[in-house]
Image 1: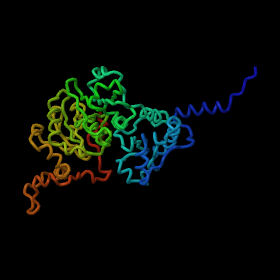
Image 2 (image 1 turned 120 degrees about the vertical axis):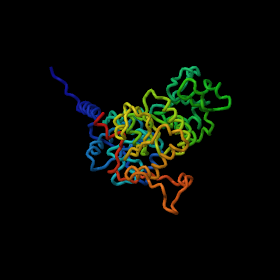
Image 3 (image 1 turned 180 degrees about the vertical axis):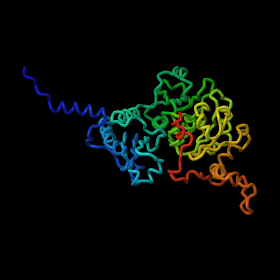
Length: 410
């Protein structure tokens, strides 16, 4: 019996599919945009989603990622041809160190996700393969807003999650487009829902509106009172609701929190000790709301973080314990029982910014009597622009005290 020859084109297609799945195919037409100081803002601000490869040519892992990243771009471009919908970009961090510093890039290669020009907190940490990267981009294209078919669905919401619900007359409105943009950015922090048209009518007596349902069955709803067409106001309100002032740090999310680039104020407490956590949350809100953005407020399980506690001569038996991790050293708040003394916790944070904690760590307590002419009142100290001493450190001096130095022990 005479066998028919296999079509060469079919054979090539088969090999290509196998290589694509392995992330090893030779890139064809690449869709990577090289970003520099002149074009980065314009390109990222006009991109719905942008995945940016921050690399260095001398880095072997950067070299390995280049063909995979390029082929993933080709695959994604086939599915999403609109060049403003998805952008694959790259930054040579040796050539553009200013951009690397701006986005706090400390390792290569780093893949960062941007939405409408805003960098997301969570960088890409999946497999470095064509299939995995393409799947990640597909997930980012899923609509973050779930449409409610009946108002009865609201009563069945999972109240262990943070839910934001919009009541709009139509999808085709500036109100909805602003809401959708906010939802895209905060999709990992909140659940976003929308009731539209006739379904939403009973809740639109005064027009379109947005509410937040906090965690807990008995907590009251909060209504957004700002302009529904103002993205900045809507985003600021939603972010405040979706990202709690005091977050839990774990070994799973610790690296993501570290990448935010600001020091940690951490309460170490026993998991069942909710009273200490509530006190800490209240005092952070009362004393430190003005410091939000200059320090991260966190709480951690004493038992899980027993090894970092050892480095400050503490054990789980000493909890609750408050400490600052500046990424260089850890500084201990003297006594948790003093946390409710007005201004005590705030002064602890201000002492970090002024460099006092760092000085005293190395040289002992500052002299109590100041040099004549240099005395500073408490009011003047509080109004002086804070300056963190650790921000001036060279990268080689920086170490992530709570997260990395104990990994071999865990």
